[in-house]
Length: 256
Image (cartoon, rainbow, N blue to C red):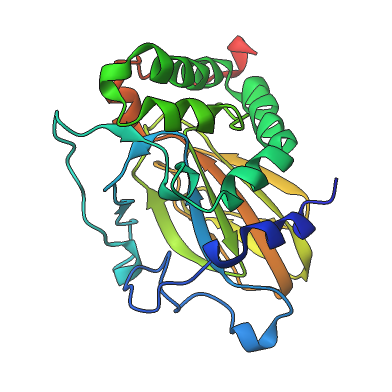
């Protein structure tokens, strides 16, 4: 099944926040909509996280860019885990329908993670089960159960990003040993991913999958010619911590 046409289901949910100062959601790093056939913007989807959570980026060595600054939100004991707003029963159902139609891509993310980091895969699956086994931690169990019926990935969350370049940053919402999985595709040319601390620059062509420890390795993605979408799968440390799931350890080749 072609993935790009399914984005029409998401419609207005893929958007830019014109008032945001965050490089992730504000207009600074997105292509101009007038230059594209398709939309620009981001949508964050999760079957269970904290509703008022803010993504956090660490300051990269040698970089003083404001793009690397964000606020850290501390979770209180009374905070409950809940699906992202677009997955709740009160939403219009478009995100639920999209996940149902594209469960294969979530399953693919799990297959890749299972090969690269089996322990993290097991931790992710445990988190999905604990959401069902610990109702006291959940805001609305009906919404959570419904969301999990179409969530086929072991990752806690997914960001679908359309037509945006990414400045050098690190992601601080996970744990150091965890891998994030980035799947890029579209009709575009001349796009590169930079892993600055490793001195690596990759050809980031359509169909490429990159797994990195996003909390450790500063990374960036250049602009490109054409239209591009990225599906970024990741896990939330705050969710796993609340569910009392062990952090796990670093992966090494001896465990493969």
